[in-house]
Image (cartoon, rainbow, N blue to C red; front, side, top):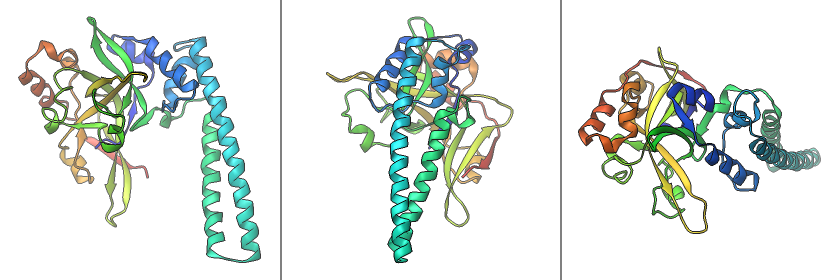
Length: 308
């Protein structure tokens, strides 16, 4: 599984690099919905596209973003105050009587206070941080599809909910941010060969077990490549009274030796740039050609480092 990835979020750069049109109305709609209170997870790096003058200046979208950030900041401040009150109360009780319960409360409140302070500091920062481009399941990312004779950049959620399934699909199938290559003709048969996209990333992260059996997060980067072009399947989910949901899953396969030796059994497929249009237009090629695109991939050596 690729549980998170560093994604190229700068839309102008992505459009220029891959000669793709940015579908701005979908981005604007997404930000309007989040500003109105819908719980949409949009990476901070995507925000900078609309709040940085040199990128894609849009007063309307920038206002949506600032409105959301003000509301979120207020909520975090309120929670921080509540946790500080909780800590003070726990410390008072511990001073009166040194109990394990009070000691535990002090530890929990202290950790939450630090986490909230870090979130507020990051929220108020005007400079982009490396981790701002990292996406996790249920967050949005810019993907490239083929539409009306051109490449188009659309915002889609990272966890594909196929058309026709209930909203509970997300809870029942929490691993569907990845699509195994060996399940494309089965579980993903309604998307594979029909709805294809690419996601551009610089690295990906996996959970692995260390020698003591403890979970660790490892970051994998392809040596000699700044970007990886990852094939994806996607769908458009619609239901009366609900906004349409565009969502995707990236395709994984058996890993190369160095990834397996690092402790993980899956790896995103990295297709060749020359195969982008054939992948994005599956109706124009045979199934055998699609299989060849997935098999005839880039095969870099994946360097890795423990990050947590």
